[in-house]
Image (cartoon, rainbow, N blue to C red; front, top):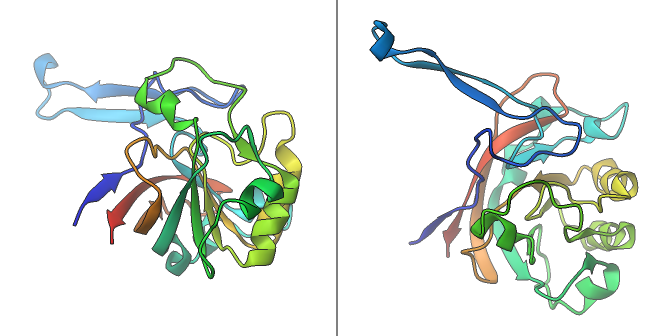
Length: 210
């Protein structure tokens, strides 16, 4: 059994969506200053690094993080490698030979090179899912979509893709690092923080080879 940690390490150097708060991670109490223990504090947006989007993120009447079903966040998943894609459209998906009855689908694209190369700063030209691609996945019965950059939707067209998926209660996992993962079947374990009333939450995500 091989375990792949596909989460991004959270630090002040981690890129965030433009306009979102940067990560603040610092020690509040220090042993070297005479304290009995080291204690750190953190401040960041809930869409930092590897995280999930709940429907409330783009839908005023959508459900929130505490209503997410763990049975969707845990289970068989398929990683599809799309190295040539600039946008993941319905046409690209139709040609991708995704196995029938796939319910959890993770996209590995050239985005993952940013994480393996430690590319500094936010990259606006990331590969993302188009609106027609989102409709295609909903029609196929996909229940969880994971992407290897900080948004499932293109930088200049964030709303349609999100709304299509979230209206159908498709869980979105963003900020995955799939650079060390080959195309194929795995078991996904993705556990977001239990943030009551929030529209998103940071998560630790792993894949287990099957």
